[in-house]
Image 1: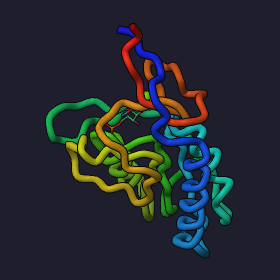
Image 2 (image 1 turned 90 degrees about the horizontal axis):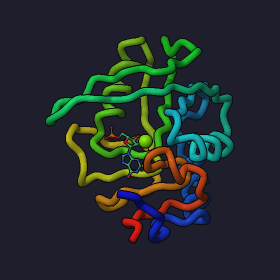
Image 3 (image 1 turned 120 degrees about the vertical axis):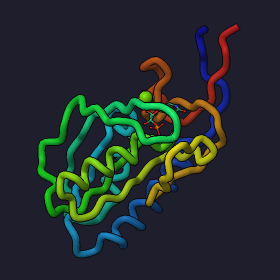
Length: 175
Ligand code: IMP
Ligand code: MG
């Protein structure tokens, strides 16, 4: 089956406005702190790049590539494909992800960073599909809650395609 983009679900201008708000909120909440903002590759790349420029703090940057696997209602195991370079020990860590879907990736990532000695771990996701949750997690900072639909664009992919598009779109089958 091949898919093509269908409709714009979240427009670039709305993303920009929301990213501004999230940046302000994070700036307020982390006042006086020097958090590490971790970009979860690759889906969070555009969101991360926009967000960190709206955070008015001496934030440091790092990246991680993970994949989560597992089934049922238990949180999946996390496989670290490319790890961070900085130590999270005694640091305040802000995980920046594209979307919270089942929640498995976020839960496993938070657990791992805490095991590594992070002082605090919070998650910031551009999108959230609350109806798809199989593990108990609520993002600390969420851009937009969306219905149970597969979306692409602004970092999100289908088969590695569409990450470069400026808006978030739904998909449809190619006729
Ligand atoms: P999780 O199910 O919360 O662990 O989500 C894991 C990953 O699935 C996300 O970081 C995305 O990379 C991917 N994903 C979930 N829903 C979508 C979607 O609608 N479009 C594109 N990728 C998605
Ligand atoms: Mg993906």
